Image (tube, rainbow over all chains, first blue to last red; front, top):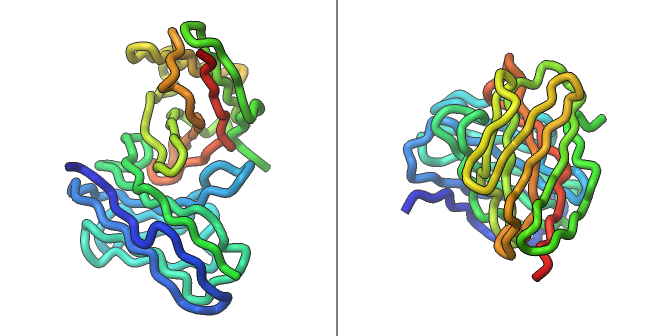
Length: 113
Length: 113
């Protein structure tokens, strides 16, 4: 089954404790992206990757890091989480950028206290 | 400043009638528009898209209309069904970036039986 998986689905952590949210896709997609969803703001793009070892900033990259060492994986790293990073995070992939259908993971609900 | 605006946070429609969801944009560089649908506790799923070279695109019960001069697009769902109850997001990409997507805040559609 074609899918995008994210782990964990829910996470409560404390300010400053480094964390990683994993994302994996099994569709051999070149493009992957991370979004955060906040009430009244829709989805905002954090980082995206056009291919292995090629990443770039989206609209809200501050406080986040990503890496793309393999085609299927695109982890999101919060080196020192802060309460303003409390949000719902989605990973997505597509065969060729945002004008192609993006497949989304189920989301990761992160709370930073 | 939100470049993609969905001014109706929610919309209630009788089953079997037409649902019309609206979206306005401000950036004249946008040339591709997409609609995604989201159920609670799931990631968004792609619904339909339209390029700026067209003014209409149809897929089954779903039709998207684009009015470039007014910088306005709308999604029509006919007839509306209970399974259409979801949050609908409008999103846009610019001609010079196939990798970044700007999203609206979403409209919650409720189909009444």
